[in-house]
Image 1 (cartoon, rainbow, N blue to C red):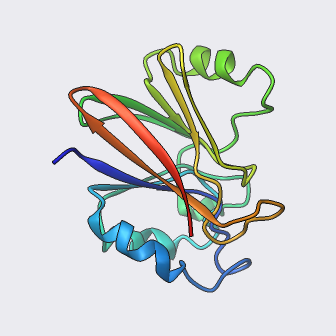
Image 2 (image 1 turned 45 degrees about the horizontal axis):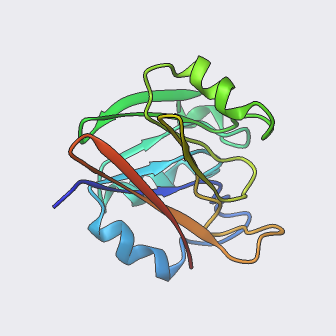
Length: 160
């Protein structure tokens, strides 16, 4: 079975929701890794997520300093180089900007906009899972799944 990461961002707990949505929990249970791309707001959410699987998280613009989260991360997952950052900047020029910032990454996970984004071109997969708790102007609450197999990455954005 190929390694699977559940990818979330912009949970804004407790401001936008009291807890993670029920529909997300079964995906967290089967994940080998949970990625949170910032704006969790309540650092205790990291402990809750860790009851499901190991967690990697970056600091969002609304996260408190005491959460002690890094601005960005780079790591290997199933033989694939993953990078994470909360705010990847505007759409225009994003791919080139992320390629310069994370030249070794095959996947860059980001958040901030609450707008799901999945684009796999030129050897770089850009993934924003949207938000499972604060859809803003999006039609649905969303999250993503990232799977790796044989050194290759695939992602899908799912609605809750």
